[in-house]
Length: 150
Image (cartoon, rainbow, N blue to C red; front, top):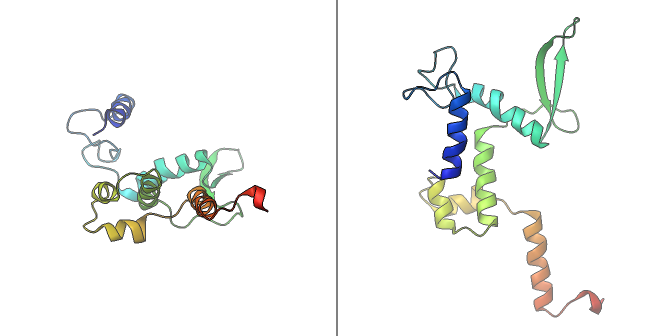
């Protein structure tokens, strides 16, 4: 584990009520830290709010008549509900970012525990618009096409 990740996890351990050696990192409050939260609950408690704070999608607070918060809904920027978003999206984002950053594809494939690099390249990593634009510019430059030729 990288030291930066370890530092964040140590910080989280200091904030959580379940910080004993046998407790899970994202522990179930219902089971007093002895079992992890299920993926969908952890996603709703941690990933959805973080994504909304990062501007990936929007959150809509629903309040009762006295103004108390009842529920938070997550919607895209057209107001449509977010139906599927979670841990798997992070895997795709990680793969795309690592490949885009020039990390060796075999290393990315190993990090994602893919047995075949084709899975990493064909399914998990996605082209980033800035990279596509840069590649197009390199191609045009190699053909001798510059803005002064227009």
